[in-house]
Image (cartoon, rainbow, N blue to C red):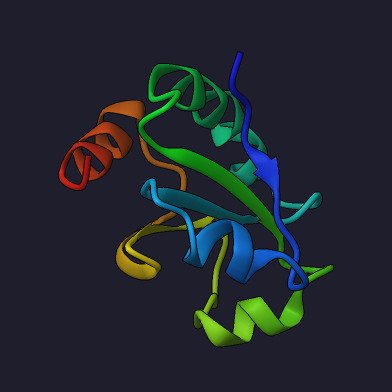
Amino acid sequence: MSKPIIVTEEDFTEVVEKSELPVLVDFWAEWCGPCKMIAPTIDQLAEQYDGKVLFAKVDVDSNPNLSVKFHVRSIPMLLLFKDGKPVDQIIGAVGKEHFEEKINAVV
């Protein structure tokens, strides 16, 4: 059973930017209601795309430098990485179909 992994400023490069798989990074915070709303969908997608896409979560309060680096101005914000570079983004609480559309474009 695949679940999103927690990523920090210390291991972001190793886990996300050096990943051979595409990575969907969820920038979130504990106090963010919409972030909590999409969390079950992200968990479902992590299982659905197990072995094809890596799912990661970055707590913006604990990792402010990553928020600055990737211009995270509102959350939830999800960045889709391929070959170590961000190739697409999703902002706000969107439906599962929207996530699948974005993910399928890079898988």
